[in-house]
Length: 346
Image 1 (tube, rainbow, N blue to C red):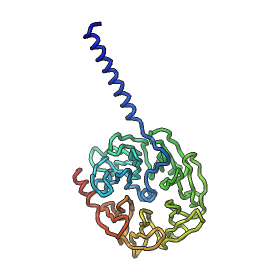
Image 2 (image 1 turned 180 degrees about the vertical axis):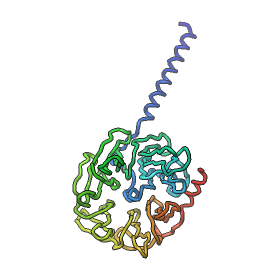
Image 3 (image 1 turned 90 degrees about the vertical axis):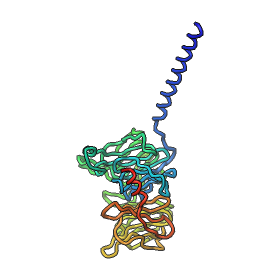
Image 4 (image 1 turned 45 degrees about the vertical axis):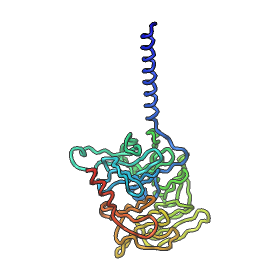
């Protein structure tokens, strides 16, 4: 073989090697990165308030009320805004690789582009790319536990009502976990804590290693949140006042006699909406029930927290959205940076 022929062979071999390497890289890049240990997608307090904010790896993902609830990302100090979806999202979760959310285009806009409803559980990269629909259908609260998304699923054709399902983050191993309603928001070290919804409202735990359910405590609880050795919950027997239970010494502390509509345990405080006909208010107190103060008078919902701020909206509208520093003195203002980001993306 002459020199020209040898050079041609070498070039062809190099091209084959490069093509093979590119193919292998493509396969590896499409492989879903799994989590080590008991990754949790969001706090129970946020998810019990529709999961509109979620912070992971120094990034805050949020549903922007000034842009029809579309998913945005920003830094915790509200800079570097980026729009990630063109439809409304809720129940946002994130690990160190991906962001997960329930997406529903039905309320995201008008016109021909929105005539067909797109809805279901989605996964994407932090920059909004590599979007994958993991499960099409109606879902309420979803929580990432390790490498599985546990979610409340309901179908209008299903006479059994809302049930708990799970699906692996790589879109495999979908399964029904319970044939009754379980709120998966409170996940700690592989255990999902939830209140009963059938015969009682006791505190139960679901071991995600085996998907087995056990009784944890025979209290009458609603929306339990486990934080630093305590279960915070709304006491059904006593007009939904806020209490905390210590499993270590089996004691119950009443934190407030106010009737509570929503609450979130975050930072040094518990933020909660006081239910009252004549004096409703968003309030906060320290975790032991001391230092109660009014954050804002009136009716509020969607109490979500990041490492810097607590965000909330009026009971009748998702905009304007308000905020106050998570810790320190109360300083309520509107979330103007999100509104400005929405204007830039129109």
